[in-house]
Image (cartoon, rainbow, N blue to C red; front, side, top):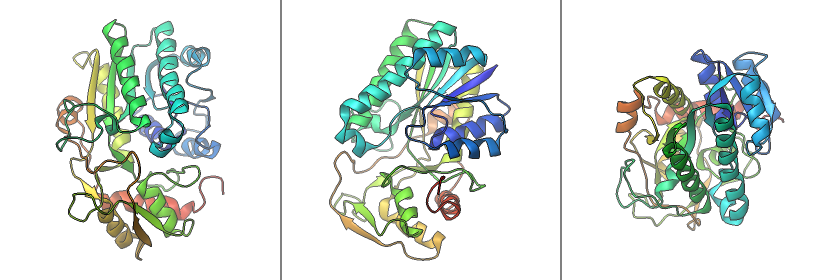
Length: 339
């Protein structure tokens, strides 16, 4: 039997595919390559097996997903396939909803048709909106501040409804801010266009691909005025997905639909990260503080207690390790996978 990873050529999906392979699972990757590179598939195969099955298809296409489930005898799914830019969702809310909710609906319909019941869903801390207290727990109020977060809430609601009618056991992994790369430096984050997230933008500045990092907001009610986030290593996050699948496969594991935070439980400000990156890289990263960005929140970090208790998982890698690994990837791929 095998595990299907939708969106498996993307940043988090590809790292999770490696972690699943290393844990002894038979991995099948499905991706339409609309926001990822064929070179990522090559890198993935170099780290796993040369014949790792890859299906180029849209996760919203029920027939394509269904054929993949049947052809590869898939019995569990990790679903990443989605657009993920906050700013992109603000400029194209309809497109984000159509793609993100459509892909989730397509995967669920195919799973139902082929009797596949275990699903790990790539959710996000954006579902908490602007939290009224930190750290956030899974019981914290839900409410998105941008269309991207709204699509994650809609997908969570769809999956909870499907679980309620039976036949589907789901873990909704609400993770925080993944950074870093595979320690080999062969697999990493290669966003299209100008990066929307802090660390890839910062690293592109450090390698000379961008001129200067924009720090969005210097007047937040935080110690240094910049926003605070919970950053976790992408390999810790990938291993969290392995732990989630293990929990679902356990006869005494969670059933129905359960949300779990994946984070370190520690918040770092944007300027904290800039200072740490400058130390790791060995030179200052040019940056300037500009106005706040629409859709951003002031501060958020996780309470990871449920992940520890339910999944036996905790993040172990430090901020410096995240940045060292991300910098290794960026140095080896200054212009991305295909340059």
